[in-house]
Image 1: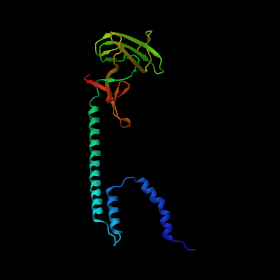
Image 2 (image 1 turned 60 degrees about the horizontal axis):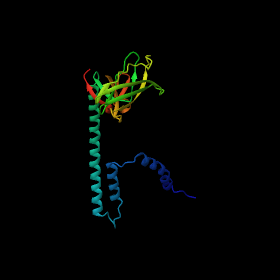
Image 3 (image 1 turned 135 degrees about the vertical axis):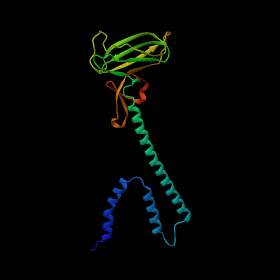
Image 4 (image 1 turned 180 degrees about the horizontal axis):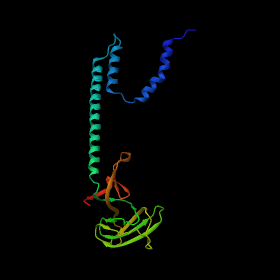
Length: 222
């Protein structure tokens, strides 16, 4: 029984071709041009490629080439913007920032700078919890005008004991003089001591906290 060597070669090459196609999901302009040339080389002399269809394919090739050029320029632009942003962020080292947060990283012996920001005038209740979720301090403020003000937390619990270093979250609620709810948010302040670029994300190192640039609401000279 004879075996068609070319058929065997063709069949054994199919998995390899399939793998190559799977690895390359997007046709580049060189691939597109090769397809056009192959189409012309293998056309039926009795039924040549329709001129209109061929012109349409050339137009697609032109559009593909232009799009790839635009994509390449956009990639370059994004890289430039990214480098510029990193340079700009690095210039913030040593400056004081105020940022939105849901808590602070307490360092023993250093009072945290935690504040509340009221949309309208009102009184604030701040509940501070440790990493286990246990409430360690509740602060009741008197009436305050709209804006930000320091909560006056000294890093101690309700009994006056110094709390250990660690992450503490704060939950705020506020009411107006008529008892209606007032929008309030927590903020913290600190000096930028460095910039982290880990994982492709740019974050400010404030004390022992990492702060996203999008959370920063104010930058001042220290």
